[in-house]
Image (cartoon, rainbow over all chains, first blue to last red; front, side, top):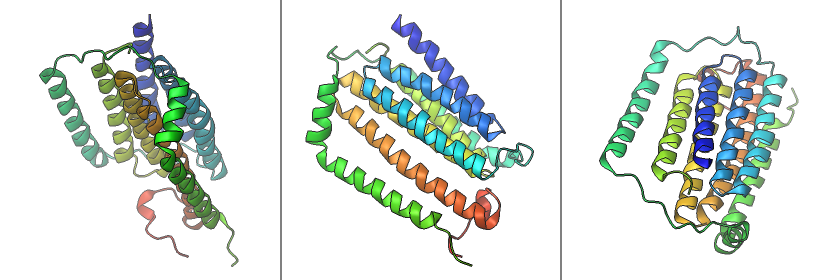
Length: 163
Length: 102
């Protein structure tokens, strides 16, 4: 049951991401991306990481994508006729690098047998919190400082300058 | 662990390749470029959570949370920069953006 659900959700994620990156209209691309993030959040839930699934929905699909939408609408970028399609010359490095990724993936799949499943002990939310605030307490401080620096940078860039 | 780790890695690399294509192809639109970076960070998060589920350790989920925090900081700064540069140059083409000063 869960396996079938995982494969369905993985297909939904890949197709929604494919639509998002080929869409000319930025608002439609954001909506497709939100679909992809919701499917990915359910995949995280299936992988026994409920907190990450919740944060994915709240922060990614909720906050970050709304921020994108806000900037697109504020700058009036939602006119698809303004955006020109990238030329074939721009697609060449992308095709080359994705070809390298897929070739290495095929080599990885063909050279190694299927991975053995690990032990079935599930990481609980209590384990997650103990690891987060015990082992990685310093990292939490650094992340909070990084967010503070981001606030300072955004305030500096966003202020109105006198002419 | 509901599916083999290899299937999760294949899925994450497909997502990563899609994000990379988005970043490299949409150089004319900085919003689509940031969306590509989001997709790539999401695939990295998927690998972390899959490893956390495979080895039954909470560290992977902790690093996924840190990626979320880092992404929110990065996106807010990048979008503030986009607003600032759009106010001056009236375009979102990355090739036009070379300097920040007035």
